[in-house]
Image 1: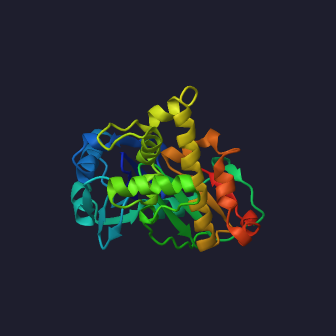
Image 2: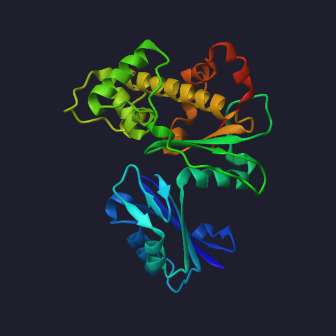
Image 3: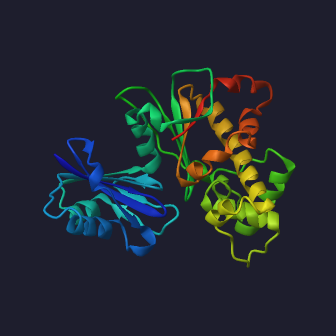
Length: 295
């Protein structure tokens, strides 16, 4: 059976075909969301331009946002999509929508060992797992079980209160609360979050344009504020991952995904991520059981 599948993020959408459950790697196409009207239009263009003559029996997409009954809404993009729209656009008889973090969690067991890069080596070897995404937005999902039968509940972790593990991050919290009315974890742990941290350190007013995360990362060699911004983001990231570890006890590991998480690949060693992850008072030693991997 032929399936049409898509990963709909806040910035890009990737569309592909799968045959009898196997992804057709050479069928993957990426669309920049800013250039598109919506998910249905992307699927129509994909089938017309890249898969002419294909008649999928089912269509399934994941979206970066909350999913209700037969409907998904992106958190960082004004798009809503329904299964009816998916079926109409693709001609498929069946349609399904899941949260993107649920998709990431379900995919973990299908990845080869070389897909993972160790950030923290823990002592535990098996158990439940967590996927944590830092990209356009921030979210996580706990992966319950092992093998083919997994349960991955949905989550909107990015919109919890920003933790304040240090006086400096408390000041950042106050800055974000004053600017946005609420300081969420996502306002630091995301592409725009890195920009917010930089603006805080530079004492920029809310009317000044934000430096892009790409610009900040590209100027680490000559901009001390860029270096400090990365350090603060990693401190918050470590703190949040540690909180998630104590909440869900993922003895099978914590898996970091997303464009920003990957862009920081060379900055985890020796960074505040490690100390903030383990700084849990009398449970600090307990934290040594948890492994953290970059996907």
